[in-house]
Image 1 (tube, rainbow, N blue to C red):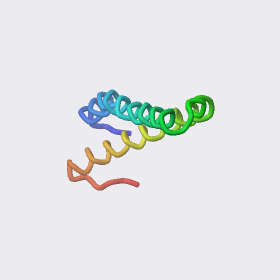
Image 2: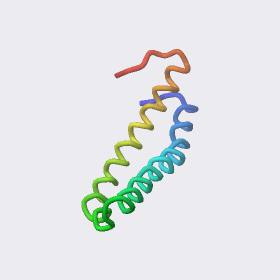
Image 3: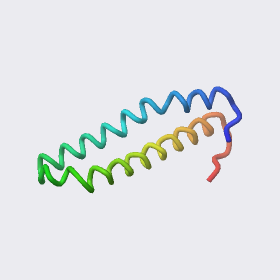
Image 4: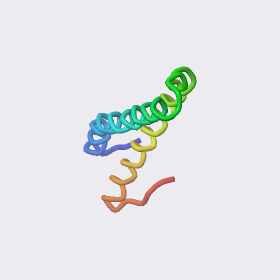
Length: 79
């Protein structure tokens, strides 16, 4: 639980660029899959799996940003 208001606001605002970056990776991955393998492979399981994978990647990116904000203030990183 973050108690500092500015960190909470920064994390709340950071979800927009993080979501755009993560979904860009998903689009690139789908495009490469269609281009070099098979358009049918880009549907079904891959589409659902990549959605969950991007969700996890976004969560990790948000966690890492929080850790960077903590280290920037000279605080000890928590596991």
